[in-house]
Image (cartoon, rainbow, N blue to C red):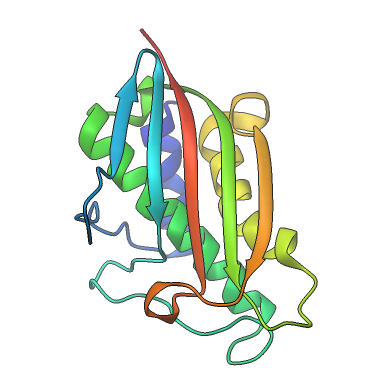
Length: 158
């Protein structure tokens, strides 16, 4: 099954909606292709209606909300990739993911939150190609109080 078809299956099963590819909110490109690599700028948890999932994890929202926000951020990243590449089937593999969690000072489960995105990528691209190197870190704040921000590097098929 293609990555595009897998994503549609996931959206249907989980009753999720794909967000639009986000527009830049500053002076940057949402995606930059360099050779066979696609660098995706930091994305937030954009929902289909254009709103963002906000709140500090471990304080204003719980870990499950953070996980859901990371999954939603993964969908926003995939929306950007699909809009610029034409199809997610052009993604060869996930190279690197950096997940930033807007977290309370005593919150310690940042990797469990970012798993929302990482598990989505594994489902869409498979366990071998959908799992790459990763960092999951806590931040004192994020723009607009979004719960997570994630950036990713994909290898693109020639």
